[in-house]
Length: 166
Image (cartoon, one colour):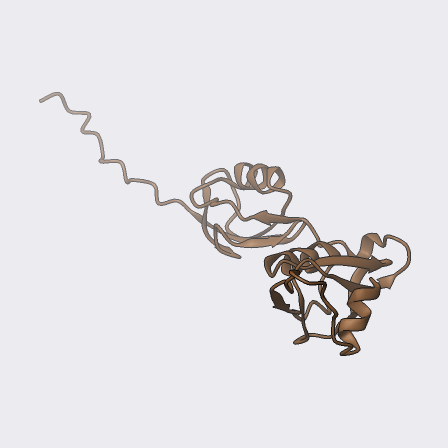
C-alpha cells in the first residue's frame, strides 16, 4: 500500500538494475457502485480493491483517471461500516407471458415468478388475459405488480339444430 501511496503522490519509483516497471492501468470511476460491481470494474483493468466498510463506494483513492501499475490496490471508502441489507441489489424477476391464461392460471404463473397480479377487465371462467404490463420477458424487481387485462373469449356461435328429420 505504501508503494501505491507514493505513486499517487507522484513520487517516482526507483528500480533495481534489470528490474522493469509494471504496465500501467487507468483507474476507473467506481464511485456509487456496490462493492461487488466496483471490484469487477477494477479487475477488468487488472487492479485490486481494498475496501473500508461495505455498501456503496462513496470515494476512492487513487481518483478516477489516475495511472497506476497493474496489480495495485485501489482503496474504496464505503457508505457504511456494517453490511446494510437495504444497499443490496434487489432480486429481479422475468415477467412471464400470461397471454390467454385465466385469472387463476395467470396469478399462479406470476406468483411462481415472485410477482403479483393486478387484474383488470372482464371476470369469469371464460375471461382470458389479453394484455399485460410490463410486457412478457421484461426484468422487474421481485415482488413487482403485473397489470393484466382480461377479456371474454369469443364463443363460437352454435348453428341452430333442425329438429325435423326430414
